[in-house]
Length: 351
Image (tube, helix red, strand yellow):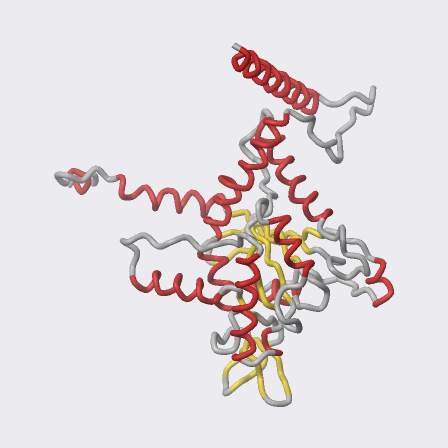
């Protein structure tokens, strides 16, 4: 029997197998994802990230004292880890922002963060315009977890200003930290207040895509529950303890144990589900919306790019190497073409 005879069924071409091909190719290549975590010190950012991905991204972190914090400026610390699970590889980069919101004057606390996001867009634009585009490293920020303190009555002015500055550059996911300090009634009230303030200030946060009509009911229900959970109220823990004969990740209090992965205790599972099941959507929005906005603005202005960090210098004569020279020539040509188009537009308007 011909082994291809199964493909000769009348009315069957075989392109229904395309998703399987794409999946196999993606799994073999592996995935890249960059997550930024922003929030004041002491809100459990590092603990939550370690719990989400079951890894230790900050083994040698030193916590500054109060005096150091008051004078500290925002630094950005990217940490990359390779995670493999059932043959699927993920290159995860987490960008932490120690010092954010800790200084006495926080006026410029998000300037460094905006510069970092723009730098990653600029680097990607350079690589995309270069000769070797096969192995471009994507370090653009695909998602930003913004941690909100549970101890206030909603968003602080700093929270509002930060999200306003960044919602056009990155997918913002608001997260209420240390959810175990609030009762369910207090948590629901805080969630409502935060959502009202986000809407009132015209802030655009990441919105989960609508389900297609042909999706199964279980997936539709999952998405509905995830949408209802925003902003996600979470608590993190990396300690395993025994509760009723089973091992759980949790926090031990005098009155009982808060189980991190128990949906009745917090939204940790929902946050992780949202991140994993919509990872591709977060990447697509970064590419098609945020990066395209940056790219079109850069090209429209025709401005010279910011100075490239770690410029490679030839040891013999101090000249830029061939790759950098070609990149600069391309950028000069791009600028010249932009100026030429602008001149043509002016001439047409005058006619």
